[in-house]
Image (tube, rainbow, N blue to C red; front, top):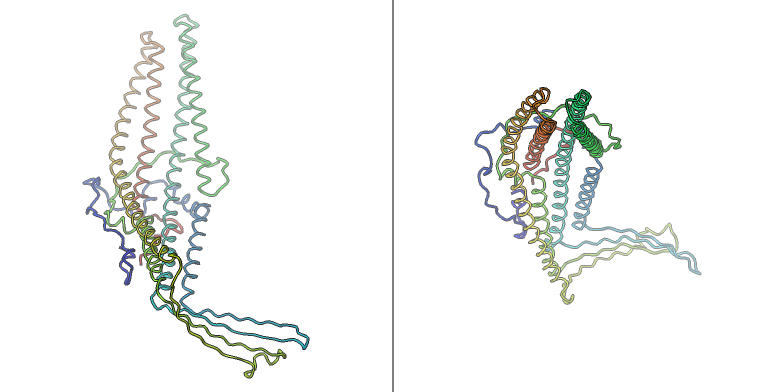
Length: 445
């Protein structure tokens, strides 16, 4: 593990052992190499630039960056009690006899006899490390969100174009039915049925147009841009390569940002609990002062007016109405809670990888089945169109065949996008690296 290997780590900081297999249970027997850059591996040339823009401008990421800086500042402040504190003060008092000036320097220091101050400083430093890991996780999450939204926008465009094609086809069918009605070949019910089918397709087109504009605005929000919906979607969904090697569960636990952050927080809670326990022990403080008082400001720092003092005190808590013991117990309980949170975070990460690995093959099967469904629906439509033209088929058969084809094509587009989404989810779950500005992986300590 990362933090539990540090010398002198309290036992409450120790991450619970997880029984991890050598490989993922759902990992396929055959797979491609590990991806050094999963964004480029998705095969869309526009995606790296979009992710780089989001990492630079996304407001949520900016907030995470600010939180990280605040945690670093807190860690620096946590180191201060290890050193003496020095204060300087000066006053001027007006009295009937004249002005009286005084000045002094006070120095105080609490000796870290039991290591309590060091424990608190270490807890603060580990909390800052957890914030760093959170920021790395936020970057990875933003990258995945941009990728997923970008391909959702491409799908929305394809679905909208499919609906436009459907409307055009329904309009041609209506024109044919109306001409046949004028010649007395078909009944007026056929005309009304064709008009109803056209109106339904037009309604669906409105839904698709709305979905595309909303998805475009969602992407612009991720990019930190004004959401005017002016983003141009991709032309096609990319074809995925073979599933990359997912690594091992042990690698996941050691590098996934949320798991790393959970382990840092567990270690910080352990040091805080240890400090709370040591608060029951006596403390040693040293206080020194160097002061002077005079009626002439020019003599304020004269050796004859300066007085030195140095005191040492040892204090031990006698009666605090159980407050210190309660704080000790509370801190220990919080450390145990962090241990449980670490286990839950780790198991959630492992579950996400296993789910994505299983879904990859199932979604591939679904795409293949829908490709067959589309081909058969296309052949069926062509046959029904010939039958209707020759007077053998009915308008209901024609409309049904066209509907089946549109549904099959729409489902195929969605399935391909879902498979891409799942591939993105896999890379997010295994914390795969990506080549984009400011992409960080938390350093191990």
